[in-house]
Image 1 (spheres, one colour):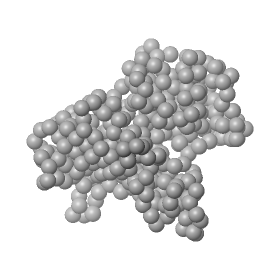
Image 2 (cartoon, rainbow, N blue to C red; image 1 turned 45 degrees about the horizontal axis):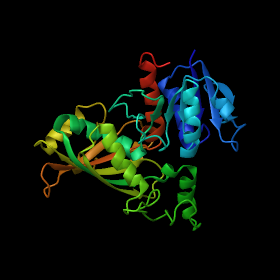
Image 3 (cartoon, rainbow, N blue to C red; image 1 turned 30 degrees about the vertical axis):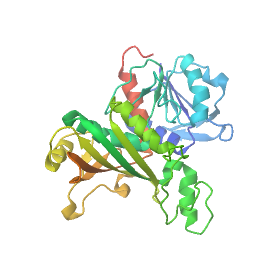
Image 4 (cartoon, rainbow, N blue to C red; image 1 turned 180 degrees about the vertical axis):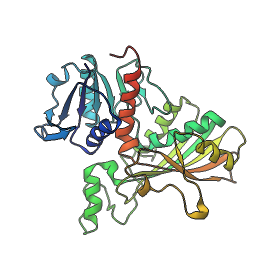
Length: 329
């Protein structure tokens, strides 16, 4: 008997988690849906059944579950994930709360596997997830020395409010979710600013990349930007490798690896586009170029659906991964 819970089931990512569970054919015997008090009582149709969403309380979290998918925000996860864990569940958390905590696995299934020192598993930052998969492929072949990110992140990364703000901005509505208008604009600002001038989002990518790739010495920097796009993040990576290689070799490396999809034919205007990534599970890579100003350095452009591979899909893939491990429950 497998009892599965989804916390934050009425949000954008929560709904995508349910869709992905259905598409991936995840097997369970009992499903419980949780939300905040505000959304509790909402009815959700899923696989021919109607579920009434329950309020997430300490009493409810102390019930026995095998697996919990958490998409309810950092403070909620900080409080409730350990309660679920103590009651025996494996918790897969989509917030930033646990990612850099010692003993907590930070997992992208194409890259690494959980050790389960703790039964809380962290889902990485959306832009980090899509980036570390091609980076892992390059790391395996050549080794990595340095990565410089520039992200172009869709408003759906801010949830429903971000999507609404982009749509309503076309009619001149003043911004509420962002510090400036996102419509017809680009914001070099995601999350709060830190003392060194980087944002928290940028620091997340730096720290998480090193942790997932298990390389504390890897040089990483990032600039994270919000763009007026509804869905799918785009990431530019400047990657310095340890071995000599060529653009053609990297293209072939990606083309032969099922973990990514290569789209790199600039003569025919073929390269990864956010609009083409939306609604798809894959990570797309292209626009691979040598940087002649730095030794062994190459540019890689990468797109992926931030609500799927960047959140819900990756979480469900972790769920599959853990279900296949022996001795978890």
